[in-house]
Image (cartoon, rainbow, N blue to C red; front, side, top):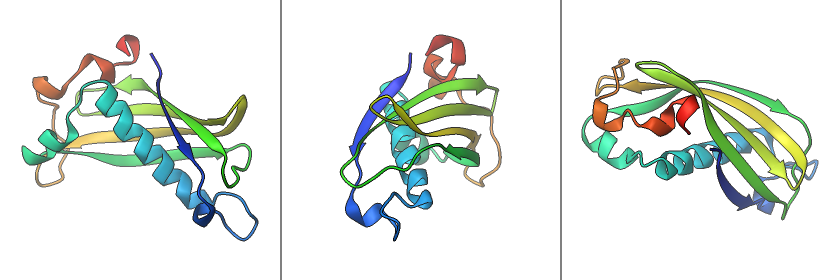
Length: 133
């Protein structure tokens, strides 16, 4: 299963060339990952209240085409790798059939000190595993 969300490009997200500034793609991808976690039943706020977190350790982005003001973007997210404390989520940003950007985001589950920590069973959900989402 691929989890999907939609957003509309706002004019203030664009640079002097009239297309989305590269830095804003990080915000788009973050929004989509949060929606992905919500879709699979991962309660991020409860994780934080319990003293844990999910940190981004690495982001790889390939920009394919520019996004423009008022474009309706669809962001798809799905897990491609899962270990005991970390994983990788693949993401694509599309405008209709056009691929705008592709990303791979490596994340790590951490304790209250920011150190890698094994995911407790209550948050080690099937949707985090590539074969089950």
